Amino acid sequence: MKLYSNDLKKTVCHRICDDKEKISDVSKELNLPVKTVEKWVTLYRKDPTSFNGIDNYEFAKRKIHAARYNDLDKKSLIAELKRKDSRIEYLESVIVSKDYQIKTMEKKS
Image (cartoon, rainbow, N blue to C red):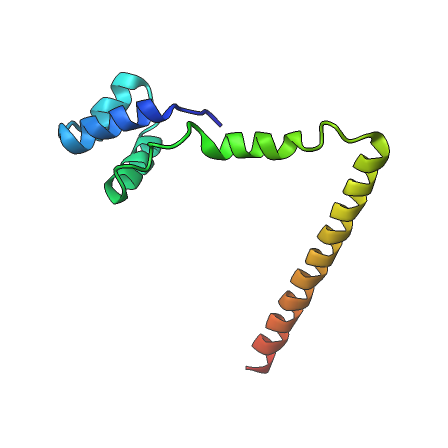
């Protein structure tokens, strides 16, 4: 997945929404996928401040979240993996159970 700065997104949206340039023209000029630009414009039209935050916030958030494991020793990492595996197994069982309930209800109706 390619990441783009918020400055670029704001500039592109400004040109399209405020300067009334065509999405296809701006996309072609800047070598950007049309669908990507359309998504930016949709967000911008809903909230012109949508690109005022930290660049690629979600990516940065995941990176910070992942860094919490950097200082763990091997034993702690293994314990964390086991805890997560257990949680995944539980959630999978809930999904299977709900799926079974839905199928049972569909057969009855």
